[in-house]
Amino acid sequence: MFRQLQAAIVDLDGTMVDTLGDFEIALNRSLADLDLPCVTRALVERTVGKGSEHLIRSVLAHQLALPEVKGLTNVCGARSVENLYEAAWQRYQYHYLAINGEFALVYPGVVEGLQQLREAGLQLACLTNKPLSFAKPLLQAKGLDSFFTHVFGGDSFERKKPDPLPLLKTCEALGVSPKQALMVGDSSNDAQAARAAGCPVVLVRYGYNHGEPVDGVDADAHVDTLTHITQALARLG
Ligand SMILES: O=C(O)COP(=O)(O)O
Ligand SMILES: [Mg+2]
Image (cartoon, rainbow, N blue to C red; front, side, top):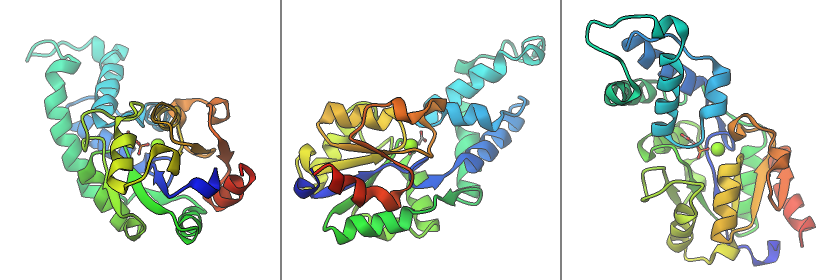
């Protein structure tokens, strides 16, 4: 498998950068603007990975169902996910972009792993479900941008991972076939997209995976850190 690879398509949140701190702070500042209580980091960890719209809708639904919120009568009328969504999304963009990367850390082994992949002659692209306007400055702030010839976000294509479309489009941009492009991710989202697109996939064990253990997710290999990636690929032949 390793011998036929021409490119690696790398996920961002939970794979290269631990962004839970950024998500938690941006969400809680947005919730405060809407007079809603704070979320826990554990809720954020289980919810992140399917893009901002899914994250905001899930968090609003969770907070509106809290007994202390449900009991409140609002003079402006009933509060629902639908009627709060637009304001929440506006506040969230503002707060996220104001702190983007400040409360986030590059995982150990990421730089070494990306260097190994590049030294093995692979082109690198970043494919995340994060909006592109969040992803690009984050990669820059963390000094990772120069590794990638292409960066695509959750709003770059019509559909997001786990749909195979973003991976197929990324392969097209790289000029490689799906079989020649390795997906590197942290969740079932990445693995499902890869399987459906026909890309091989390696998952890291330290990411989010919607709050579930990632070892149970079908992949070609699981690695503890990205420093083990070329070794793991070589074992696959
Ligand atoms: O859902 C998000 O915002 C990011 O998710 P991803 O980088 O793991 O694709
Ligand atoms: Mg991820």
